Length: 221
Image (cartoon, rainbow, N blue to C red; front, side, top):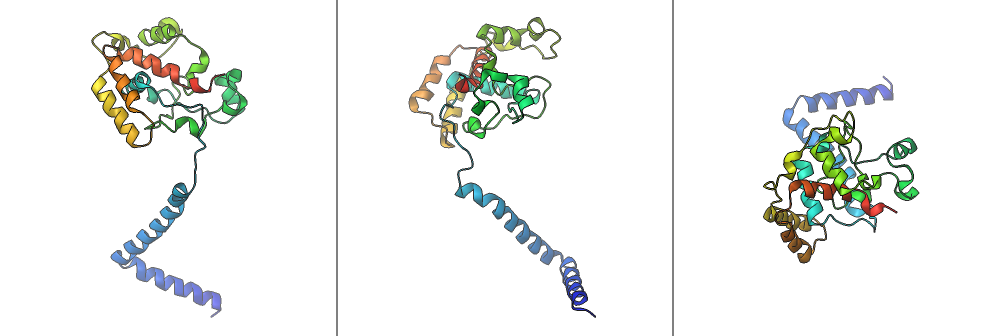
């Protein structure tokens, strides 16, 4: 028997011993997964994996309130927020509206987003840099109230209820959200949080408009 055959025979014996013992196999499997996980995770704690973009600022109170509405209404199910790094992709959405450095989405644009709203389906257009389209607040409002009136053939549902004067921003909840975000690294000051009080009576629709107008605004020329 060759040395190679002996090695195979030894390996087969060991595998049969391990596979035949449930507890032993579980321990070895756990060790293997743990080692692999450490190899993948440790680098994220020892290096800066995100290049921050100085121009990008956290959402203010009104914009954050709108982001909460955006999530509550499930807008991310139909709209992505990530322009992929391909020329046809940047040309398709915003062309020369941005400098070459910021045409496609960068990790630094999302450092203050918890959770990320990348999305995966484009029933509607990508909204990562919606502000680049230079649409007015009134256009955004009209579009939310009756999409088909503004965009011919639109399949987007209407959201007139968001502009009902009784459907307003929950200021206390918003302040709690901002305090929570501060705990995970978003640099909200006490003044930023206190500014949420000014939103008393502001409709959720107006807050959503403010959020849409923030998307990519920091990167505009």
